[in-house]
Structures are given as C-alpha cells and as structure tokens.
Length: 303
Ligand SMILES: Nc1ncnc2c1ncn2[C@@H]1O[C@H](COP(=O)(O)OP(=O)(O)OP(=O)(O)O)[C@@H](O)[C@H]1O
Ligand SMILES: [Mg+2]
Image (cartoon, protein in one colour):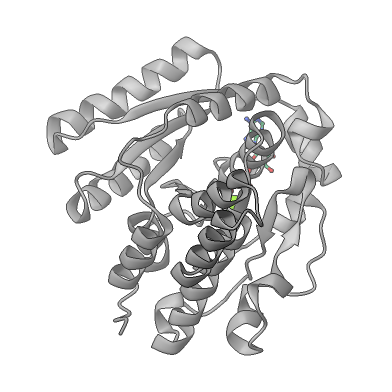
C-alpha cells in the first residue's frame, strides 16, 4: 500500500466506511517485517531445516505471517525439504518477468515460500533493472501480506550473494555445530560481517549438540574469540540436539515440527521461535531499510 492508498483508507475511516482496526492493520503492514538471514560458515549444518521449521513454528505457534526466501542460489532446496513442487522459482522473475505473486508458494500454516534455483548466476551479475524489480516486488509483497518475518535461507560461506543478503538484513542467525571446522568457519563469517557492519545483530544457534551445556560451551568459545579479537558481542539464541527424526523427516519431505512434533529438535525449535519472537528489537528496521541496504550492498543505485 502506498501513501496515497493509506490516505484514502484514512478518509474512508473518517467517513465511517471502514473500521479503524482495518486501517490500523493496513498501516501496520507498512511498518515492519523482521528480516533475518540464516547462514553458516560450513555447509550442511542444518540451516535449511532450521529456517523452515522456525518459519512454521512462528506461523503456527505465534500467529506470525512469514515468508521464507530461498537465497541459496547454489543448491536451493527449501521446496524439496517441504515436498513442494514449485512451478516457478526466483529465476522466472528475472527471465520471464513473472511476478512474485505467481512464483511464491503457500506452504504449511500459510508460510509463504519463494523458491530458489540451483546454479543460478550470481545475483550481482543481474542488471540494475532486474535487481530493482526484485526488491521492488519484494517490498510490495511484504506490504500487501503484512509480513511479520522474512527468513532468508542463504548458502554457506562467504560468496558475495551471501554476504549481501546478510548485510541487508536486520539481524543474522549463524548456525554452528561443535566441530572445530564449523566454529572456525563461523568465526570467519562473523569477522567479515563485522568489518562491514559492526552493529549487525548476530544470533548463534548451536546444532547437533549433545546437551545444552555443551551447546553453551560451544557458544562461549565462539563468543570469547569474537569478543577478544573483534570486540563483538554475540547473542545465544539456543541449540538443537542431534535427532534421528530430522533425517527421517527430510527423507519424508515433511518438516520436522509437523511430522514429529514431540521430537527433541521440534521442541527445541519451538523454544528458538519463542526466544526469537520475544526479542523484538525496538530499533527494528523496516523493509525500507532492507531495500536501502540491499541497494547499497547489491550495488544498485536507485533513482
Ligand atoms: N539436529 C540434527 N540432527 C540430526 N540430523 C541433522 C540435524 N540438523 C541437520 N541434520 C542433517 O543434516 C542435513 C543437512 O541439513 P540442512 O539441509 O538443513 O543443512 P544446510 O546447512 O541447509 O545445508 P547446505 O549448506 O547444503 O544448504 C539434514 O538433511 C539432516 O539429515
Ligand atoms: Mg541449505
């Protein structure tokens, strides 16, 4: 909704044609989506499963409107984990001028899914016009559906696509496992992000931990190194155990929180969703900020 539409609604409200709550909701829609990119240094640590199950839990248990953007342009697989068969993916926005409305799928509990594409050319190699359309459409979609959250599942590592999405987000979640390589690669991401934006809120989720205590130890190790060498504070969001139900759910192509709601990791994801949703940053940025930051980091000069 643009400003003019907002004003028209206010006029209608004044005339008694619409309820004040509707107007309030519509205005709310403009104001805020929390945009969180999920990443890791090392691949295969559980990002995609965390992103999707977190999205479903936020929608189902907290009544939030959530969009999952599959921004892993190397090995996009959000749709596979969900057992969905998208007709279109993000490449069709660029190649066939499809709209986001046409491309986005509606998943469980009304979670919206923007399917990614494997092996897509780097987003930075798109033309200015293509990037402009993507972020314009995303902004309009966010406002239309009054999204509370946009969760971005990125690829692992430090490609420019990944770092650009991380920098354009309000905050990031870095997934680590207790393996030393995972930790050192996570530190590498944190270090690079810190050079670009020292204020980027950085949440840590420890996956495949044997216990809560061991997860905390992993976090403390990472945090002490970040603190000492980067003067950077990290936020411990929570942990997930190794849970044999997760590979089974992936094989069955049904998200864990739906297929095994009582499994350890399902319960831990519920806790993570609660922890995330209860920490609303009062300085929360808006889609406009995302838009501006995306403009900056994807090298697109608007206007
Ligand atoms: N807590 C867990 N317990 C058991 N297995 C897990 C757990 N987390 C992840 N896995 C296993 O690891 C696999 C990879 O998970 P996922 O695809 O979510 O990782 P990813 O970080 O998105 O990988 P990529 O970097 O390739 O995108 C899953 O299919 C699952 O079998
Ligand atoms: Mg993945």
